[in-house]
Image (cartoon, rainbow, N blue to C red; front, side, top):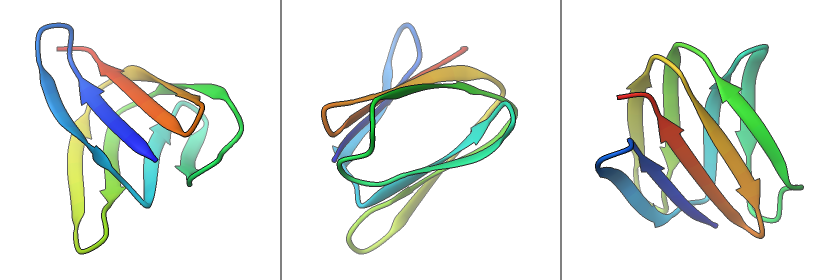
Length: 78
């Protein structure tokens, strides 16, 4: 699935991922390819993006994620 993590003014990450774990407002949310469409309000924590050979980690304060059509778009507060 395609994952993009950005702030309003720049793209922090964009790549194909095997899984992404988000710090949701009510707990961790794991997203894998072909997940149902949904929105996730993010709270303080870490986003973990699992790639084929590594894991990228991003510390966040808050934001929102949109999952749709095998794509995850994350918009973080800057």
